[in-house]
Length: 387
Ligand SMILES: Cc1cc2nc3c(=O)[nH]c(=O)nc-3n(C[C@H](O)[C@H](O)[C@H](O)COP(=O)(O)OP(=O)(O)OC[C@H]3O[C@@H](n4cnc5c(N)ncnc54)[C@H](O)[C@@H]3O)c2cc1C
Image (tube, rainbow, N blue to C red; front, side):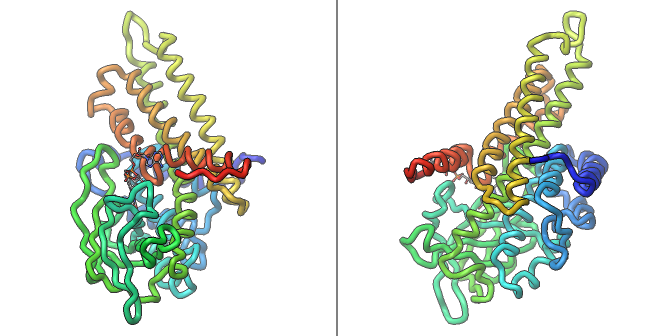
């Protein structure tokens, strides 16, 4: 395995880095304080092809490889987690699910507009009583003439208020759990869709996260993704993709947290010297730098598996689980390096501290990632463990 970047990957990385440093970094603080999604920035990012980065050129995307796609998530994650996660959900969960299992007609209908960022995608799986256990979802899709009628409530739907389409999961065979779930592409403004209030959140305050109510929402059969009762396969693959993407976001965020801490420690003086001279501070820096390189290895490995067409779910869960912890520890340690200033909104580290916390929750919690990793280990012994 050679994880050095090719000429093309280096070119992509430089392009992403340049955009993130010039365009994303300058608005990140405003996004957090105003709690507004940066729509103008999204237009600029779309013009660069970021909303369609991994979508093939045949459907209006750029068609970049997996490793390059993680570089995009990493560079965005360095500066604005709200932006990085918004694009990750649009791409890894929504657009690529359509790419993965959509009919040619569905792909032609949705992907060019999604790749251009004209239509932003959401993924409506979670419900008030079905989080880590989506098999228990209760949103119903009842068969009617020409299609289905959807009824139920979805919460934590990222991007729901950004006026696009959602991949909605509903039960077509109540009682059958995962085996009775079907997926549908539903326009956010379709009759019977009510987009609720925007969540107030600890971090990721520029994200548009909402509850979505479906009331007798008619969805034509042509909008069903994959076969009836075959929605779970979409969820599994979408989770693999988004976990790897979020691990790359964590990698980016951890690097910036470290850089903030190092800069502060090199400037701040106590006891007559810069605090960088204190071994306790050095240890925080050394631990974080080491964690970051270990995380980079996990992200690269999972991206290599994905890019070479191999099964990468376990590797993605490892990277996501480790990434969430590394980003959290990095923000926590570097906040400590800042002393009381780290607790002030005036210093960016406090935003990272709040934002990275979400990475241990969305796309499956830490506990669920650990289950996925442990499941693979026990499977080798012929033992099937349950979450
Ligand atoms: C910022 C953000 C954005 C999100 N965006 C989306 C989105 O776009 N679309 C979407 O569908 N969802 C989204 N979610 C929802 C997210 O996927 C869920 O929050 C997550 O799956 C956990 O579900 P829950 O919150 O209901 O917690 P619960 O499932 O109720 O879990 C509560 C606690 O119990 C633990 N737990 C549960 N089951 C087990 C088990 N078997 N073993 C050990 N521990 C367990 C959990 O790990 C957690 O610590 C988002 C969440 C956040 C925070």
